[in-house]
Length: 120
Image (cartoon, rainbow, N blue to C red; front, side):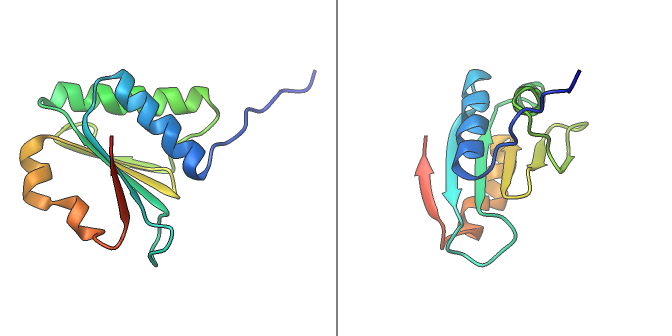
């Protein structure tokens, strides 16, 4: 019997799936940054936050597990053990889940000031 492969998500479809999973786990202050017109490694960046490291880790787990169920695995990820800032790299979409203090300090959104930002 042939194994049926799920479709791997890309681009805006991947962004929407990530946001849906983050919202389901009550991620706060979600911002989508469209970087398609900006030279760089990724086409999209998503930044969100949670007040505790446990909540940051829960959002990470929800996104990764939800996307794996949809047939898409992250390429890389880091920070999940500490939970203060978790980065998930889906190649064309980079996700940052942070506690508010680090988000404010590093001001990730300003790094991509040329991108088109959409707050959710």
